[in-house]
Length: 428
Image 1 (tube, one colour):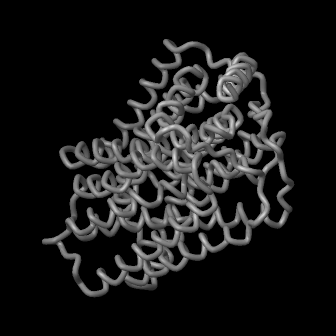
Image 2: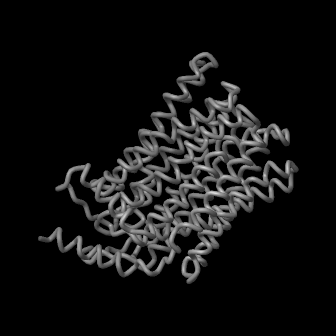
Image 3: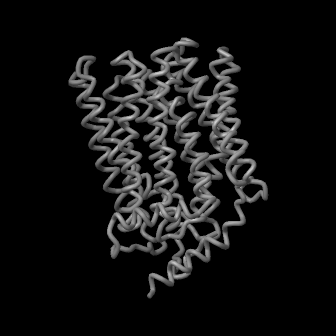
């Protein structure tokens, strides 16, 4: 674990830590709920898989870029204030969307408005997403930072699974404007919870260097840290070939294949989130295992095969089972990756390093959603999901063969020494 020698630590009270995690959990739910709702609303309006993938890209394309910018902001300014401002702005944006839907401004002929809303959302949210994950290091003691990060990962994937379920339940009994209106209110409440957090570890900030120099320092830290670089590549495979098709194609595939209503479709999608939860819990045990590198590689390779089996089976219970297995494998991979990145990052660059995590996990699925949405438009949903899974399996297997072994312990001392050397240079 990398510990900053110059940082003094202040004990955050237990109830404030609980508020931090609960408010984060609410934000994860409402974010997944919004994404799912906008995807199915776009499909409802346009009746096009490729346009649905495009709107998904317009959410997470800006998300990818601004998560990197958000990492710089999280290392320069108060992470708590960033979350408060961004959550308020998101609430206002989604409220305006609900009003627009209710007034009938969005129709099949001017669906481009959905793209405008998507870009706005994708510009604001990454600032709070990066600040939130970096803020874990300000509320937890260094010795429990890895475990605390996995807890954050667990509640994020649980929110990822509950979001579609909650959206489906609301849509079953209410209109589209009410669905997005509810989303707006919950976004505001999730941000207000952070106002109760008043006692945190001091945050190391530096405004002497330019923003571009800050950005270069963050990238340099990752590329010079071979462990971080390799796990980022494995995480990118999961983001592009698993999460992207899952979010954009799976909802419509389940509806067409099994003739599900909104509530039933949301519940089916939620099984992936249950698997993510189980996998996240398992990652807390595997995190300290001396062969956790193999578990990370194995889960990344196998998740592609399990996702491909969902459309291949084309039967309700086998598809449900394989989706659950995909979630478990994804939870293991995500839990190990997030804890390692958090532990290996000194506080002075934590925002920028974790912004890469946010960039890959939330930004890159947009590329996969668009690519496999176009493929589905020219073939079928089942064929596109199957291809995505098989490509994930093949590429991750090749990467595991050609990359150096992920020895997650050999890098620790070198990174500590590098961190101390950088601090000595800064003192001079």
